[in-house]
Amino acid sequence: MILVIDFGSQYTQLIARRIRECKVYSEIVGCNADLSKLDPEKVEGIVLSGGPGSVYDIDVKKYRKIFTLGVPVLGICYGMQLAAQLFGGKVKKCRTSEYGMAPLRHSGNLLFKSVPRRVRVWMSHGDVVVKVPADARVIARTETTPIAAFQLGNFYGLQFHPEVRHTRYGMQMIRNFISEICRAAKTWSMQRFVDGEIMRIRKKVGRDRAICGISGGIDSTVAGTIAARALGKNLIGVFVDNGVLRLAEREEVEANLGSIMNLKVIDARDRFLKKLAGVKDAERKRKIIGHEFIRIFEAEAKKVNNVRYLVQGTLYPDVIESGRGIGPADVIKSHHNVGGLPKRMKLKIIEPLRMLFKDEVRAIAKHLKLPPSFIDRKPFPGPGLAVRIVGVVNPARLSMLRQADRILQEEARRLSRYRDIWQIFAVLLPLGSVGVMGDRRTYDSVCAIRAVHSDDGMTADWVRLPHGFLDRVSRRIVNEVKGINRVVFDITSKPPATIEWE
Ligand code: XMP
Image (tube, rainbow, N blue to C red; front, side, top):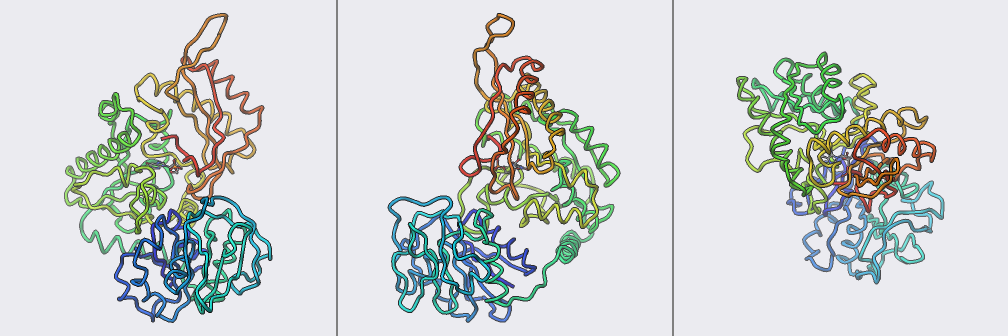
């Protein structure tokens, strides 16, 4: 296996998934883990992730052990700087931090096998290596970063991020490290993953029962299907109508999922809307929703004997953005099922997909032979329309957003590129704006349209929607939805924005 050491990068799990794409098993440990227990028999290579810190602020000597195991090590960004600092090189703050694409020239090292000599790479750093250790060889440069990669024995360092899609041939560089340099065994597959999770759940739950929070989306459906295969009738699916669902969502979920699992539907609309009344702050909304979900699951669990576990379809991006990754990462937003959970919980959580990304979950769904209607469903966040109504959530604003979103979805389904769009949705802004309709002045709400392309929800680009489409949607929303008199189109990527507005 390949060991990934996490120094708090937003992209650590992307590194692990690129390794899985090479069909090689990988494990992640935090940078504060006890590295003296590493078993050199098991580890075929090590990757050091990026991170938000600076290597000159820590005692790098404690990481010497990593380099004494005799296995190849790849350092990415912070990981490269760490090796540079440890072996006598020099790392300094950049005069201006560098984020975005940079043209790279490399010198033909094995790490760059089958990569064109000039290639565009993605940089995201505030520090830089200004002197490599004695005996190290610089193997790539960019105009602004003369030491963009170096090799020292069986250590390879990259200042840029090969794991993000924007780095052209980044996957090839990782494949070269895994296959050519580490010569790691190819033992990872979907089948092995599913079998492993079924065994793990069976062992954990034993003769007890579990409930599974079902949202109708692919993540909870896949997690629930794996758990149902492990536990049979001892798994109970619970779908909560939290009052912030889209139009007809509850009916769709009931119709689609009732036949797949033992499903209980709970109407908790009033309860959620009461708790959300008057709340403006996005993080508070997320936490309220996370808490209420758990309290409802706990109450349901009480009604059946021996329910001790809650299965959730949490994915890795939810974990890392909530600041609950393995290393010391920042909180971007508290996903309702991770950072939004109450501190004290009676049910123990099982999350079979916690380390995976959406497109990997789609591949597992295909492997499990789930109907294409699930596999192609666009992601919908657990806190629902509550995080798409910026500011206060109330029945009138919910109704406006539901109508606007229905129009957008109707029109979007007619687009030839609909399947390629990761998410397309309407957002209600906390703004009034002046309009003129039928010679009358109006002062109504503003609705934003958001559409993004993404592979995994970690990074996203806005979709260049046809003008004719935007025109149709705007006219229909303003004409058909009472209370909205202006439509705007969001043209921001992630980063710097996130996909949802809150
Ligand atoms: P952001 O807004 O963080 O969204 O760029 C990335 C992806 O995650 C979805 N999302 C959530 N999903 N619970 C969820 O189940 C949440 O709290 C949550 N917040 C965001 C979002 O729709 C996008 O696909």
